[in-house]
Length: 474
Image 1: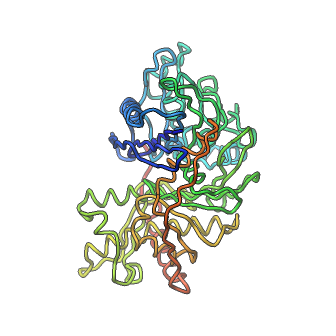
Image 2: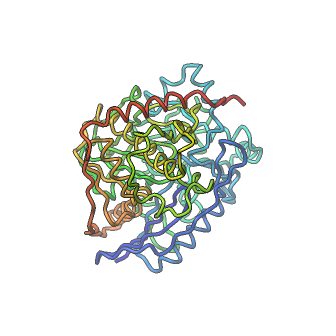
Image 3: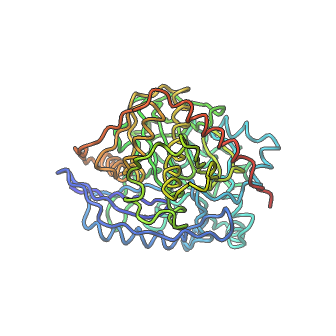
């Protein structure tokens, strides 16, 4: 039997076909545009994403079940009758609502979002984006007045258009700032706070559930991409942790039945998955810019060959030689939550080379991830090794430097499609199809230095200099 897992990410859409014989195949992968109409704004074309999903499903061929994972906080509005998108997809990286969020913060709203949703006030989450759509897009306001407005994250739009099911899953809903983390349902007070009509939101279902059919094939799982990767890495017990280095870098640690609240550490409690009606929780810590910082450097001409230019450096770490990069193109996430921060290179001299800057780029991303790991371990004890995946995991230098900075083994498996595989596993559960774990080789990077404290302190000094640089007022 065969399962198709649609991985609809920030930069591309891909489909993994997994079967009960253990075969795994990426049948199709399609990139989509990143639209930046104004500084700090990031959008996608909803119809382009739908077209790419259909293309991937066609490439998958005959399957017995479908699962889909999504970008998380990215959201839009559409017409309930026609299915027409009324707004672009406003991507999770977008910070157009930073000023509105600041006003909510000044009015003391943070305590409500922390207590109910478990999340800080930040433009990262969907709630303020959905409110912005109603306030600024006339077609959405007209649809609301006519009783035809639908609001939601991208998964709900895809499921509505492709399967005729207006629903989301509890992991995705937990990333909106509109769901009560304890009940797993929309919270009326949070919806009122942000100005999001609760009647326009999709039904919240378990991660493994009936999400309708696409071309007669049942959709049996829907999930946020990072939670899918957590499941795909085999993380099931409290303390199990993974980091995915995609557009951003996202670490998740399983906490089981426990909701780990640690706002002082910049950590976010979230739902890992819901199976058979039972909620399993996790704690999340993110870095806004990982692969996006690499892509930025490539566009500038700093990187020409991703594999060759980033694979290894024979010199001492750039930070040890005084050259530091802070990856804050979209601001700083965990543990700082500072949208006013800006990316900086610091410590350059006339002798600094492009290779030094590339090395500092990788180190800055690794050091930001190390700060997230420290925050997590201080609140939820994690194991002695961490599994990583994503594009940056393919760099030997990056994986080794990360191990050095966190003082833990870093494990990189040859098979790195963990997000799509986790989605396939969850969809298989919903269809009664048991998919075997991929038995592939892995590389373990062990820490080589006894004390990374001096380098970590130097990085923190650079981070402090990057803060409060941007003026977020309109």
